[in-house]
Amino acid sequence: MTGTAPHINEQFAEAAFSNQSVVFDELYSGDTIISYKRKRVRDHILQYLNPGASILELNSGTGEDALFFAKKDFKVHATDISKGMQQQLREKVLRHGVQQLVNNELCSFTQLEQLVNKGPYDLIFSNFAGLNCTGELDKVLRSFGELLNPGGMVTLVILPKFCLWETLLVFKGKFKTAFRRFFSSKGRKAHVEGVYFDCFYYNPSYIKNRLKQDFEVIGLEGLCTIVPPSYIEGFAEKHPRAYKILIAWEDRLKTIWPFKYIGDYYIISLRKK
Image (cartoon, rainbow, N blue to C red; front, top):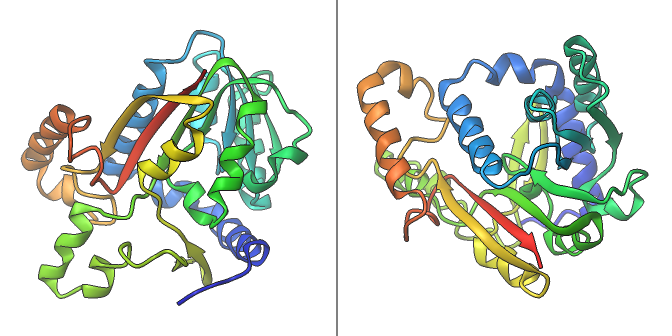
C-alpha cells in the first residue's frame, strides 16, 4: 500500500525526471518502438488539429513533441514540473531555431490555475503517461475548460488499469509486474534514476466521466496493444518481420473493442462542446 501526499509525490517525480533529463534523449530517441509510439500519437493529433493551432503541452519533457509540432508551424507552450527537463527543452528549441513558436513555463499540471500564459489554446496535450504521475487527475481535468478556445480539444496518452502484454508476463513468472495495475487505487511505486514515486492507472471511463459535461469524445485508440511495449527491449530489431506484421494488425484493431482498452497506453481525444 502506498499513500504519499500529493505534493510530496510531485517533488519526488520532479527529482526523478530532472535526474533523467540529461540522459533522456540518449536513452529513448533511438528506440524503434518509442519512435513508433510517437508517430502514432502525432498522427492521431494531426487528423484533428487545424493549421496554425496553439498547443498547451503538459509534461513536455525534453521537447521532442514540442519541436515536432513547431516544425509544422503550430505554436506550443511547453510546461513541465521538472527543472532539468525544461532546461533541456530550452536548449533544444534554441538549437533548432524555433523559439518564435515554442515557449516554456515551469508549472505542475495540478496547478494550471497558476499558469502565467493561460491561452486560451486550441489543444491541451499530454503524452506518454505523464498524467499517471498524479493521484489528482480529477483536479487536472477540471482545469481544462477555461484554458481552451470554444471547440478546442484535449489529447491525453494514459496508462490504463489493464495491459494485455503486461498480463502475459505471468507466464514468465513475473507475477508482480503482470498484476501491478489491477490493485493500484492508491498508486504503485515507480523508480526512475534512483528516486521512487507513486504511479496511478486510469481507464478511459475515468476521463470520460469527469469531462462528459463539457466535452465529447472524438477519438479513442489503444497503443501497444498488439505491438509490444518498448520495455520489451530489442523486439523490433530481433524480429523485424514479426514487428511489421504486428504493426499492421494493430493499425486494423486499434479503435475496436476490446483492443482500444487493453494496450500499454490509450490515446483519448475530446472536444470542448
